[in-house]
Length: 513
Image (cartoon, rainbow, N blue to C red):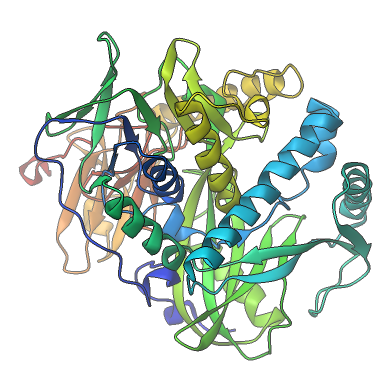
């Protein structure tokens, strides 16, 4: 097996290789628009595109750079095959709503394809069959039930006995005529259209609050500027404004990992996902005329589990035995939010606010879901009907399975809160090698330490600024990750991902023992 020294030193998604996104300056004054959109990923951009196309004035802001979060770290499968979900949906929300969920995502796929054709976008869009495959008898039985759900819902699929890899499978469930693409190349023309239609885009502009005690909502930025508007759309992965929706209690964050591999074996086409643990995902893409296989999987709750580099090593070992590896030019990880009933929250952020909307909890299936969300949010903002709104409404709270999962998730959070405070082994600062991070003690206080490749020490208070859980070191991405609600911070303490809004407190070097 190739050594992990063949990994790129730092994680970087493949989509940035052949794409140059436009740059935008920060908001530097107060502004008034019809709609403020917070979050410059695929959902925010698509929503801004639709609203400006409808003649509305829009301000789109992002805390960092456009498309630099979950969207650029996706595997970009454009599919309604969202793991084994349809049998579950029929059981929990009924056949009618389960069918609406499927139709919404298929419409999302067709919406993306229509834009690509209309604008002639060269983004590697190809139609591919999508497969779920089982390697155990128990999962084979589950796939049979899922296939029965396909038949009930009229989904174009079939149960087959093999897939074109050297993998011992019990069965595989195919959903035909799905798709894949290059997400950044797809979005650049939409960004250009937003500008051409008069939309305003601002990068490095962090929203920290929404004032709701005025006649119109007002988005307040970290720099103190205000955007007054008739409606706010928050598409910032985790909602930066909760609006009494208690989203941090109704979702959990999961990490997963991806290798972009130049393989020895020819790829047979199609997209594949193993339904057993550990998960394994496959698809191909072509960048600058070269074919790469995206090997994904190793999901776990953020801030929990083994040393994160071990997940990359596990994917590498599996890819070597399955495909053969010539080279691994790219590796990266992504974080996804999972709702308590596995259906995204798209709609009014809570019953308390009629003109603040949210899209979150995509459960790793953000490509079709982003299109679903953009169309639904546009309809809501423009007071138009949408036949899918009840399926995705954030105000739902289903007794089965949500209450049980709600209790389990919050018990898990409580357990990590206590463990982080009391049950920790500490490393000594002088034991750290270059490019190593660990929890240490500084003057008796729990402190996060990272010694960079030049030997410079970065110290932070590991207490998450969201609700006070203790962050753990993520060696694969060199971040401090919160196991309670998924906040992530750079080794210098800056917020990488919410729900936390404030950075970790820095510990001065002169405080070292």
